[in-house]
Length: 253
Image (cartoon, rainbow, N blue to C red):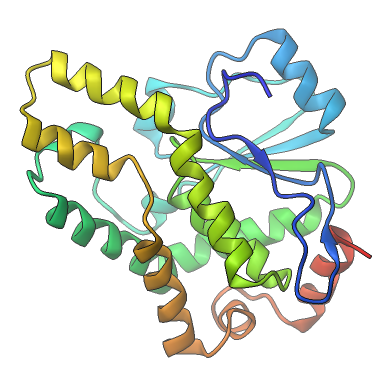
């Protein structure tokens, strides 16, 4: 895929515990879809059969960097953080936290809210229904960097498709290599704006994902609900019938 789209990948090809494979060109994840040229748009539609975009970003993020409209592709804004009543946090806000420990504490809180916050549960209920409804085409879901909101959404989907933890973490952590060039550029921009090295270290921490973050989310699910399937049934209106339908649509023998 054209480097215009950072952190892009197809979840297709990942095997689950039963040896079934996530279908290719069905579930796509990425960073924001900004300033896409016609060639990239054509690849998404013609090669990946893209029919639906789910944008998890907040209004101010979209205003600053709107997705490129793609002809005949449905665009849905599903503002997860807005549903959670989370305060707006810019990259500069992360830099101002002034320590890696403070950033980690904040990010663990975000992942906790993605599981337990009623607004987040409402958002992921909608997300799963959108995924279930797109039976023929591909869905791409994204936020700004495609790392936290998108990373957890990907982990949720893979877990419900009965993928083992090792493969889920592998997908989650690919973000750190895929985002490196973009992250380096962002840090340099803030350096040129006069941010000091301590602040830049905090910012750099916020631009990457850590295994600890996903650990925290999955451990909360296990502690509070037992399994991801039970969490989905109790909190996302995603019962066994929907689970069977999801696996029928998105898994191949």
